[in-house]
Image (cartoon, rainbow, N blue to C red; front, side, top):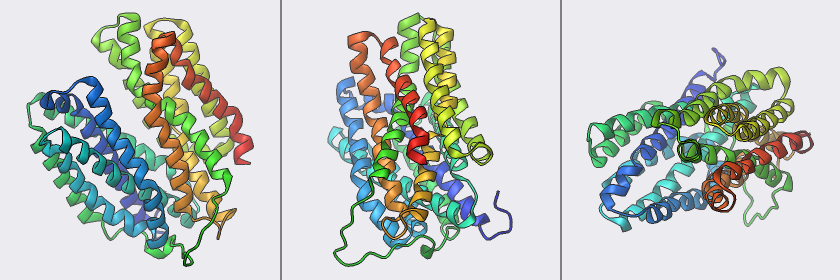
Length: 386
C-alpha cells in the first residue's frame, strides 16, 4: 500500500501498534474465568470489576485527545506502547479484589491512550499519504485479538499462572515497542497549537458520527457476548455449535476489515457504510426470525460482514472531516476522540442492555435491537456523511 514513498515504516509501526493493542485485550479476555476463580468472586462482582476498565477507557479519552493533538499522535503512540506493556503485568499481579479493581482502571486508562493515539496516527497517515488504510489497521487489531485469545486460552489450559502469563505478554509488548519506537511519523505531522485558555465548541457533526458508530459498536459488543448463550440456551446447541456464531462473526470481521479500504476506494465510504448497515441489520434479523441454530450462525456471519467496516470507516471519515472541513476549529485527534468515545460507549452498554432486555422479552428478540440500530445506521449514513 505504501511503497518507497516515505510512509513504509510509519505504516508498519501503526499496523504493529494495532496488533499489540488487540493482542493485549485478547490475552486479557482469555483469562477472565481465571480471574473469577482465583479471586473467588461472583458473576455480579466480576461484571462490576470489569466495568472499572470501561470507566478507565472513558476517563482517558479527553486528556488523551488533547495530548495527541498538542504533542502529535506519533510520540504519544510511541510512549503509550511502553505504558501498555506495564499495564498488562499490573493486572496479572492479582493481589486481591481491591488491587484487581485498581489495576483494571489503570489498564483501561493506558489501553485507551494507546488506542486513541494509534487511531489518530492512522488518520494522519491517511491524510498525508492520500490513501485509505484505516480498515486494514483495524483488521490487524482483530487479528491481534484472535491471536491473543488463542494464545491466552492455550496458556490457561496448560495451567500457566496469570502472573507469569501477564509478565510474558508485558515483556513481549515492551520489546515490540522498543523496536518500533522511531518508526512513527514525526510530531509535526498532526500537531495542533492551542492558544492559552482556548475554549472551543466541537461541531455537532462529530457527535452525530459518534452516535452512528455507537449503533455499530453496540451490535459488535452484543454479538461477542451473547451469540454462544443464545445458541446454547435458546436452541440446546452443543458446546462446539455454540462456539460457531462467534467464530464466524470474528472471521468475517477480519475479512471485512482487510477488504474495507479497497471497497471504500471502489464504491465510496457512504455507499459502503449504507450497505454495511443494511446487510448487518437485515442479516441478523432474518437469522433470528429463522428460529434455529443455523439461523443464529448465518445471522452472526452477516452481522460480522456488515459491522466490520463501521468503526474504521467512521474514524477515517472523522479524520478527513477534521482536516478538511473543520481545519483550525478542531484537530483530527480531538475529533477521533469524541467519535470513538461516543461509539465505544456502545461496547460498554451493549452487553448489559441486551441482558436486561432478554429478561423482559427473551434473548432471541432482545438481539433485534442491534439489528434495528444497524439498519438505522445504514439509512442514515448518506445524510450524515454528505
